[in-house]
Length: 217
Image (cartoon, helix red, strand yellow):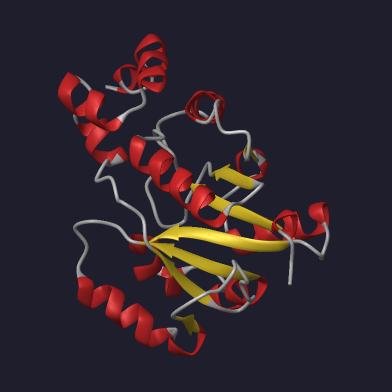
């Protein structure tokens, strides 16, 4: 059985901006699984989303602020530095070389991302390289999750014991979901109630000081 030091959590996203939903869900998974290291990987250009508004430096700063009290979490800027769209398969191959083959990657994604996981580049190889951990998300169409489960049926594991995860398998992790949304925050950047509800206080302070989203009006 692998030790907890052999497991490395991978949590990618646009984080435009990082919100309480991201923070709380990642904290929950990290604590549930007793992970000693989680890499948060912001992307610059997602092939499945619109272009980001926040710059690479602004994303890094917001992430550093959001996770300043989490010793297990590190920010990995590989996708921000590379040219072109960010593909998880390429990031995993990079990390495999950087960290060594003995490490076991736990790729942490939300249920919404799982619903469209079959659209990810080389998604089948991603599953082979990792254990895929899917967090529940509120307000989603259950039939789409059901279709995704059916598509990946051979890889689904209903239980895990003593954090003994297997590569090539998909696990569902129960968390208390927060409905915060980066899109909702960007679209309501002048609504204090939306900002206060969705953003960490220090991230909100930085976002306002830098006028990250207002300056693009």
